[in-house]
Amino acid sequence: MERLTAGTTPAGTLIGASAPDGTGIVHLGLGSFHRAHLAVHTARALAVEQGEWGIHGFANRSARVVEALQAQDHRYAVLQLSQEGTSAGVVDVHRATGVLAQEPRAFIRSLTRPEHRILSLTVSEVGYSLAVGGGLDLDDPGIRADLAAPHEPRTAIGLIARGLVERSASGAPITVLSCDNLQSSGRTTERAVTDFLQASGADADALRYVARHVAFPNAMVDRIVPATTPQTVADVERLLGVHDAAPVPAEAFSMWVLEDRFAAGRPAWHAAGATMSDEVEAYELVKLRLLNGSHSLIAYLGGLSGAPTIVESFAQPWVRDAVLELIRRDYLPTITLPEGLDVEDYVASLIARWSNAPLRDLTARVGSGGSTKLLQRVPEPAAQTLDAGRTPHLLALTTAAWIACVAPPAGLEPGPVAAEMVEPAREQLAAATRGAVTAREHALAALDAGVLPASLAARAPFRERVAELVEIIARHGARAAAEEALRA
Ligand code: CS2
Image 1: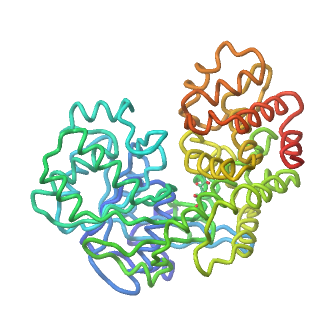
Image 2: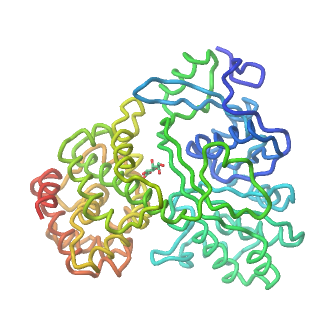
Image 3: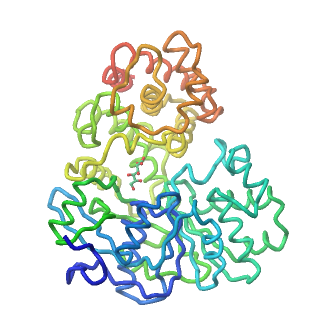
């Protein structure tokens, strides 16, 4: 079968419009989420209003995606999967690509080009090198190495900081747009970059440039994008009649709420499905808690009950009950809803999205990286609930199920789904729990491992509850623990 290229794109299948040759956006993180979200919004925006907004994209490490895109004139298909059916469209907005790990200098150079007016980021929670208590983690080994050699950085934050220092010579304004699941995403990114600049001894001119001419708008991003599988490739071949080596599967739902604070213009995203709002942080809270926080609970209960997909986990009535109670009891009271958002509709749409069988979103995907993801999803609402005099039983269940999946106590075998979860803190948790005899001791040691903030781990009702629930999981299984948390 012919390869997807500019010449073989089937007529009428382009999503939005092609970007012009000129690039205006540098993007870091060429993973599936970016290609199904910002890229699609940009293609649609270009169909409404042309502009020099092609994307110069950098993959973090993976040469595979970059090679595939380069062989396809930077075109790829987005395969939309829903209960109503499957469809595919071609996205054509990337104009150049590279691999950051191979050529970090190319990224820095790209950032200094004045025509590049937006740097967008999808580097995932872990990519920001944040400290557990907020701000940049100055003890992170990668950050330490970059601080010792700030001209030759390797971390995302070190590279962005270096790029901005070099750009400050021209003074050209730019917007740094975080598209990751972070609370106060823009402000958090700004703080991490500024912390790096200060710690690396950047001069006052560079700091002033960043403060005055670099905008960091907050943004809430939302689209469930599972991993590409051979089935994705086969579906695209069936629907489009061409071979695409880098297609992206995605749900139909897509949401993007941004602060309209751009230092040097932007594509017409507002006319292409994005919402410009002054209440982005409220939207972020709704999304990070009701969707992502619940997603984590579905994933860890699914891991422990051997459910390979999110749909299969959520289809278990006890999981569904636990998730809906998590939302009702532990999340909703901690959120001020943005004006006009109907929470019943929002939750109904979440239920439909978690029940989207054709999407086949893997439990292990959502359960991976819990040590950084949970920081955005658990400690604050848990502390707020405790401050209000109540125990956050379902947030404790989320935490207990995470521990049981990625750092199980002796005698608990969490099974193959949990084993597939990639958890960078596995070692740290294993070291901290070594020597614990009972499941209870084990859970307390995991809480004290320094992965979750000490301010939460130290609060007696929370620690006790997590320890009890880990014990119940070890003795009677996840379902018994969920039922216990629901009864409380
Ligand atoms: C998921 C997200 O990985 C996770 O933990 O909750 O990737 C989720 O699918 C997206 O944020 C949806 O917008």
